[in-house]
Length: 76
Image (tube, rainbow, N blue to C red; front, side, top):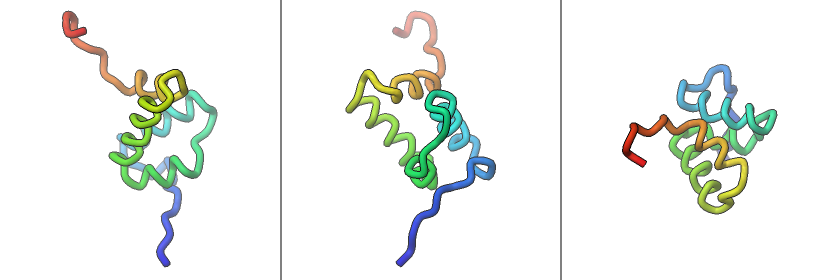
């Protein structure tokens, strides 16, 4: 049976590093579950977006807000 292993953040892609760094900055460290999800950056991002929807007043809000580029004037 094949198992997924957590990625090493130092060898991750730029997008994955950015997602994990935002989480680590807020929570102090990244969990093994997040580092396993980070095997696929779109899945990690989807999990964070789901967390934002499911728990709107949680740590996910802070992470997603840090990752969103600032909106252009007049777009809000």
